[in-house]
Length: 358
Image (cartoon, rainbow, N blue to C red; front, side, top):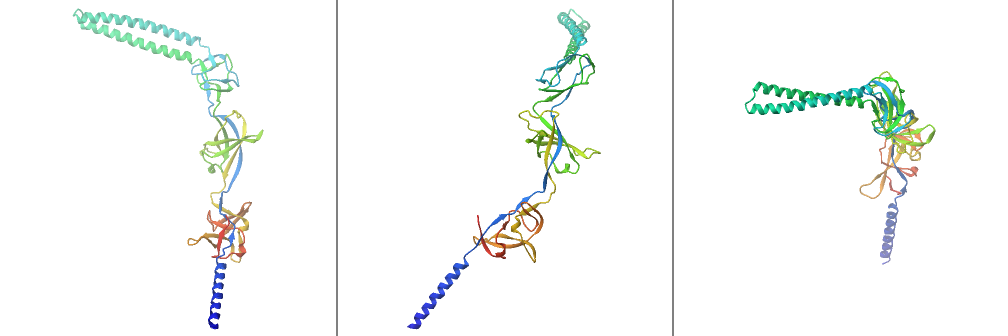
């Protein structure tokens, strides 16, 4: 009987011991971690530029003549259709009146020929006129109609020539340049004035040949005035030239959002561009997440165990790059999004179970 009690007591101690070991074995330590982040090797560079209007044509007359009246002055704001300058149009007016008079005579001849043909046609139908006389009257009507149409075209041309003696603003804008004065003789197509549009503003700059391939249309840039460096205007690269021969700088045109009209054509500005220095992908982790031993540099990665709710530790050798403010650049050994343990590295080993501190 005593032997049975001893046996039962020993069995209880054994069971308690196994339960205690099982509880100790289930403890999984928590760890701090971070996700591997990607960085790009880039820098912000500044280039001088000049503000210009995207609408800035050189306006000219379509006909030659003498400047009779220069109505616009430098800096004037004009509405669409406003007269900038006029030519002495006396000769053009005389030509218009002459063509108008010729048209009236041609119309009178056409009316007379039409009435004559009506009489001839009636006689021909009644058999009182020969066919030759009928055809002659019909040709006379066609000739006077053709002369009337030609005279009408001459009147239209003379009217256009007279209208061309007025130089009008094709859109609303500011007169940014004038090239002539009153009483000067100008030829057709000779520049008279430059009109800068009010709404669309752009900046023209130049980029060195070693950087032109690293920017593209649609890239965002910042614009600021030398006199107000704290204020930035947003811009987008609109045009860039890659085919300029014998040059070390390539022109770039930037469209600028200028809602309040603070930038004007001719202003000097600076253009800030973010330029990618390298196409290589780099990853960065905190400096205290990197350990070193006889085998080299390494980190501990927390890998999710598919069968359990815990993670297990995987020791991963890495190739280190530069030490930046955000941590070590990892050139090889890690992928973006992996979970790197950042504390208690000396207590970690391959396969150890851990849980993440969220």
